[in-house]
Image (cartoon, rainbow, N blue to C red):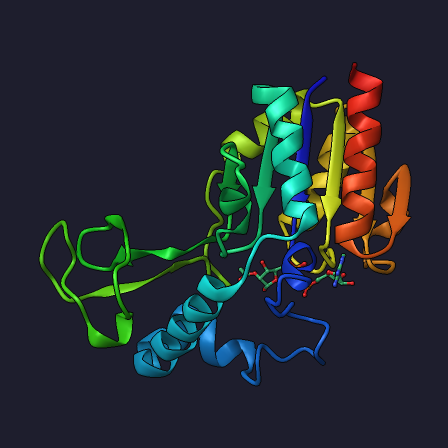
Length: 231
Ligand code: OAD
């Protein structure tokens, strides 16, 4: 069995991390164009740094919930046959114990140096303009993929989708590509596809199987079933 699980903001919602689109399309009171584009950063870096510094502080206080725990348990049984691809920039999968996690939209806990391109763990706040640990320049930005930028690890993800036999999407609205297209890639490769989400998403009709409910309930149930079928 080879399984790819795509996660979105909905899996972290019950940990207290706000989703993007459930609150009227605003990101914690900000318009996307003001905080999540390279142009916004060029125009007003302080606003962008403060926004991500605040999200990082909030993520530190959040705890993994039973959905993150269930995926870590699944990896414990399936090992390398499971890949979690997350659109989330929090570290709740890792703190639940998952190790095979690809952060396709980047990571709140690393910084990207605009001078040398290094991606390094962050200590402190980027609004303070710390030097890059690699080159010493004070040009660090959040290591988060903004609109108009290329997500990370797309080759690895695509390769894994081509060879998986089950694809699950958890807590994602299907509004942002390329992640929203992964279900089609997996289906074309012959995988069984399942959506686990609070409510119908933009791409629900594309899945073979749909389970609606809070991630903390439906994900552990689904993981139990997958493991029972695998035993
Ligand atoms: P969204 O905010 O677009 O969607 C969250 C989804 O989670 C919705 O479909 C909700 O119904 C569902 N949801 C909410 N609470 C839930 C719960 N307790 N259990 C299960 N599902 C729940 O978030 P994403 O799809 O992750 O990109 O957004 C995708 C990308 O859009 C993000 O990674 C971000 C944003 O632009 C970048 O930053 C590049």
